[in-house]
Image (cartoon, helix red, strand yellow):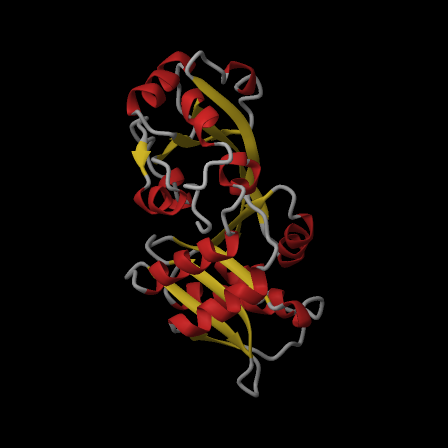
Length: 270
């Protein structure tokens, strides 16, 4: 679920099949969002998951549901927490004027060959919630992000930008969901390793604020796993404030878990 969906009225609680993840993992995969905060019954939630017949359901719930983890296991399902996701937000005027790094840069739209190369460089070795699942140990986060960015290139609601220095060198990448009339959501952002620590990341985000402001958007939203403390420090320096904390759980059918461990059918890419 996107942040703009979170701001909307609470949606019906249901398991939604994820065709992309199912094709990539060689398992049937679904998503279940228990946010924005809604009243739910844990037994009903697990009935939905069991009745879906899916091998894996990726579930997100507000981190304030501290007793949720203790209720996750059933006779048919095994579950574990895979990560905690934090959303931050800033008004676009503040972000557009926040950069003080003096790193000259501009944003330009990308093509597929450029994005594959930049994602490879930026996210090599990166781990996300897939990495917590032993059934997905051969999944490549980089390949998954490359596929995700390719789909963003084909989307009318999303823009893929590269960050260019004055000499035309591409040193960063960001993917922005621009579907909401009120805010832009940065879905993916990073700087190549050799340019980190010089303020380029802050400059790139500031430029996304200028893009949002030019379109009349009031704010910019971004999210990451709780372990990425350094990037959150950069956001705080720019003025981003935390908004939402979500725990991510992987819920797997016990028979699938037992049958699939070590099974060569688990795909090598996301």
